[in-house]
Amino acid sequence: MIQLSKRLLEMEESATIAMSRKSRELKAEGKDIISLSLGEPDFFTPQFIKDAANEAMVNNFTMYTPVEGYDDLRESISLKFKRDNGLNYPKNQIVVSTGAKQSIANVVMSLINNGDEVIVPAPYWVSYVEIVKVAEGTPVIINAGIENDFKVTADELEKAITPKTKMIIFSTPCNPTGSVYSKEELQAWATMLKKYPHIVVIADEIYEHINFTGKHASLAQFDEVYNQVVTVNGVSKAWAMTGWRLGFIGAPKMIADACTKVQGQFTSGTSSITQKASIAAMNADPAVLNDMIAAFKNRRELVLNALNTISGVKTNLPEGAFYVFPDISSFFGKSFEGTTIRTAEDLSMFLLSDALVALVSGEAFGDKNCIRISYAASEETLTEAMKRIKVSLEKLK
Image (cartoon, helix red, strand yellow):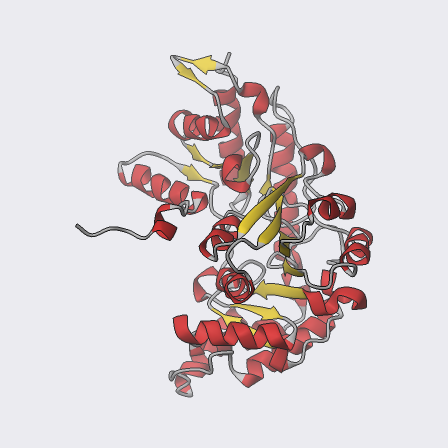
């Protein structure tokens, strides 16, 4: 009898992908499902990026690519880091992968041994913990509640550090909360972390440009921790290129070389067409994204205003990405027609069946009191979804 591996059996399925699958199944049955479960912009890839892809095909960039990425793309990424983030990553410290998810996995697989501890502030993106577990590391979760805008302080981080701590993984702007760490907050992290030079921090900045604070701050900007930080980014979110599959890291050269070695045995280099298209994105003035960012900000206000009319829903003000992460724990213990809500998962399944709106339980992101709502949808769609959610939640007594 064929047996699956222990590592697979211990791995949780991605909750966002699972809910997306359920949504598709219900739609196939003819149900009018509104899906707010996936973190995917509803904008199309800008034409100038598609034009660059077409030009690459015409010029026969269709062969295998270098494992770490084309030189001209990595040079463009290096310039982007300097222009947008004030970071000095020469091209030999940059590795291009098939998405930020693979970039993170490469780093974790390169550094984490059995029993090494990895601090993960919660709420966190669903894959962080599972990637650490596959590498046989031990996730150490620090909970940050809605009262703290879902952010942890340097003091809270330091209290979680033990002799086994080898890594910290976090995102800013954050998926699932939309929280954004300020320069001052990250400076406090840097001041603390310089006392622990053996700890590597993965700073996931994939939502960098979808930021309503006016300026994104990178942890690696602080000289005292530059050699401890791996900066992760990509083209999926801001440039609406989710299907193109390209992420990248800027890292200390030793880590960049290690990631190239790991990637060389798993996927090799990213699609040649995607890489050439991504050069156009890296070279573009981020100001071309202003209309999209303004649209997301308007949608945020629409969703927050609607949620704030529902008794029992608690919200904060997310400053980036395209998610709201409300606390819905006041509904635990309430019922409707024989269905009792005991968990956030129960509530998300109730909303799927009763409101026909697909959301994701906060349990998947490390917070059992919340649900994640993606507002990467049209204002018309969001208005209808919020109306349905309110009607359903008001049924619970």
